[in-house]
Image (cartoon, rainbow, N blue to C red):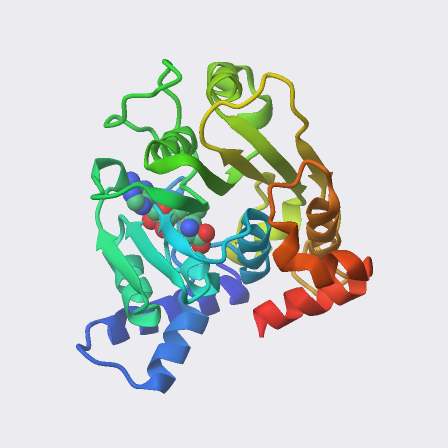
Amino acid sequence: MGRKERNRFENNEKVKELLKQPFHTEEEIKFIKESYTGIGGLTRSGWNNGQFFTPVEVAVFTKLMMGIEAGRVLEPSCGGGVFLDVLPPSCDIYGAELMSDAARVSEICYPQATIHQGDALEMEWDELFDYVIGNPPYGLTINNWDFMCGKKLKSEVAFIEYGLKWLKPGGILGMIIPDSILANQREKTFRKHILENHQLLAVVSLPTETFYHSGTSVKTSLLMIKKGHTDDNYSVFMSLCKNIGWDKRGNPNKESDLPAIYHEYLNSEVSHLNKDSHINLIESKDSKALSGQLALELA
Ligand SMILES: C[S@@+](CC[C@H](N)C(=O)[O-])C[C@H]1O[C@@H](n2cnc3c(N)ncnc32)[C@H](O)[C@@H]1O
């Protein structure tokens, strides 16, 4: 284990100690938020239960692309809660998480959300959701999910199907997924199922350094789907993010492409976003202004 990994490991251990306390000071909560990274990339046990957490920049981008301003929102594998953190306070927020430490971190840091600890795929909800957001576990074998696409696939597909099941008709799913879903022969039945039963809104390809800070270089994309079938003929927004804002060693480099991509989506004919509530941004045509907007979101 290198120095960086050892630091991550030690901080996680400190957080685990803090989690045993019934109450926490503001300072302790700040430490937990900043230091809990989960075990992804730190142990030799294969996929580490898929515990690779999303950078906050990507979580903000996902929320903006989905256009979440209010409504019921579910994060079915919330980890340390980064997606819960970026949702507007007007939302009714629910999170599910298998690992007890991560679920407790989300509970402590984001009391505005209702957190359920356990296997999300076994969870039932009283009402459907307007949005399902997140980054599911990748590559895990799943034995307790009846795949809608008819073929037994991995955890990432099970979580997308689960999200779609619990969305209202017309509701929107936005998830960071491994690119294998988009290209591999194995997932062909899944892609066919999505195209025949739902509306694919957007795919934004992310660079391999996106998850550097979580210890993986897996190639991912943002996948956005609207629940339910509309027309057979429609356009899909496709975009390639080349720069995420840091390099392969995690050092800040060129400016992130994400604000410009959001701006492009907002202005595109195929966007599902409510252009009226974003009128200032659309009129500004200046992606620097949008950078400001994203920066504001992150502040
Ligand atoms: C890729 S991580 C992402 C965490 C969080 N969504 C984020 O983006 O930072 C996937 C998370 O799913 C959790 N997980 C794995 N299997 C699960 C299950 N069956 N139900 C709920 N959560 C699960 C893992 O513990 C991990 O925290």
